[in-house]
Length: 493
Image (cartoon, helix red, strand yellow):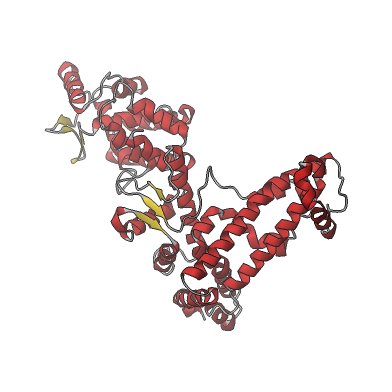
């Protein structure tokens, strides 16, 4: 697969966008050139320090086309799309032949050694012929996206811009409006762009703090990023939860891009747009497809009529674990920090917001009431036991549909589990069709929940074997978070 297409897919572009892109850069006009490599980062917003610069250049190029006589919609189509083969030399010949045959249609324009120059109140702007092919490819790509609605808006803006008098201010305003529209398109069609504000901070941090040119995402990288950005003067990212979620989202975008290019790897995911790759540390197990929380099915009205879970004690403790799924296992300590210290940070924020006094703030900073990791382990173990009872109870309800020989050894255990669940929906072991279907859906989802719980509990046990007792790990983290909470909120006591 071509590198430029891989770039799009890794950035989270839809397959439809990738197909349209291939149609442009692999077509007869640009095939065999470097246009695709140069156009891909423009579309994803990774094309240099200012992602709007190519649009500004395109607007100037359209103004220069108008100065050559291509000053309406049909003329722009002929100028940008009429050449059978687009290379810098071909564009130069086309422009020179136009000027030789009819001259410049507007004053203030001239050839330079490398391209064309326009003067706006003595302020020149130059478009080089080497840059012309990628601008023409950008124009061609934009003609087809969003069912042509994007291009219609752009063409109207360009027509207004080239209507005399053409000014530098008018070109800048048009470029800003088209760039704004382009940002909306990226956010809707490029996964990276949908989260670019956070990712644009994470990417340089990973590059600066990763060895051998590889991005490494692990527990300490996430914590280090939070420490660095949680107390800055300009646009701080205060909440640890926000940082964890941003890294988890980045990993999903990386994974989706890797799967899309049919080259995913559970331990090393190539995504660095320019050269390197990303290694997700502490990986455990592979994932096929994108993870979705199996708890979601229990929100269906048919399942909500059966009390599979009691909210506070049985469902709430595993909501975020099921939300992040395998990523919680990959980043087990970072996730434990999320479960224990993010609620404490919320307590501090609320104590400040609602003026609950310096004592409440101090207790929060000291992590006095923070959930210990051992306590969280006990909670998860209890929920896993409950899931086991639910699985047995569901098998009892569905016993007629289960292989008799396989069910026989656990038949009594399943019946007991059903009878001991004294709650709504578990009062009739021979329910109607709707209830039976609900139990079938639950029976399909429960093993995924149990699998994630077992996997995470195993990761917690591995942490103890590899480092120290869980209580000591928690005590170390209390010291780390208390220090940073003091840096963020200490002056508010």
